[in-house]
Length: 299
Image (cartoon, rainbow, N blue to C red; front, side, top):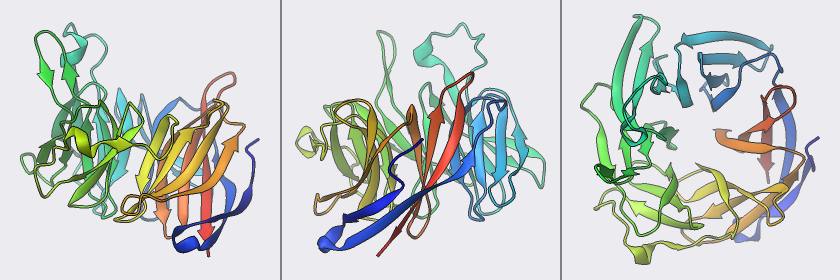
């Protein structure tokens, strides 16, 4: 059981905000293990797994396989025109060393039955989305004796070659990114720091721009709420729960929403609309299963 189910907190300008939690999708143990989660504009859920991308309609509980493609990884997103953008990894039989194993960003157009490659990354890459709905590919970078590449973020274009690639160089190791729009990206580091990178400039924050995290906890997931605020999930100091809070990147103010207990893992945050945030949680039993909880915020 997840606790608590509701309460209140103080946001920006000391404004009191109430919140409530409710389960939206309870995964079945018979389903394959999922690796990513997103929500479409019409409030359908996309779950990524090793066999492809599955769609779940929470209004009636129906599900269907949208894209049957082996070795899908990370999160898949639906574009306004109906296409699906997903990541596909190597098939596990490659003799290429791990730092050079490729990840392909593919776009599936169901109307034309065309599967095309939109971009390429390295092992550990992930897809993310900004507040305007643009899809980005984050590559964590690689470093070895024979090959080295810095972390980068790349906006996926409509056609191959239309990408906007930007390297992210800083003294700390980049752990995750969260695009805030077309001009900036929120970066978290493995050392529990963060930076706000200006994409309109060089996009390369110096060590001085990497500042201490608003929490001394390990960050698990981050999502942009608007051009200033991000929602963050992090482990609590005891390691048995999760801190869920909103952080203002301009004022550096942290607004704690709730500390969640009773869950094995929380891996994804998706903003479903104004005042609605979705959390994908993992529970472990005979087999792992995904559970989606909706957080509703109101004045």
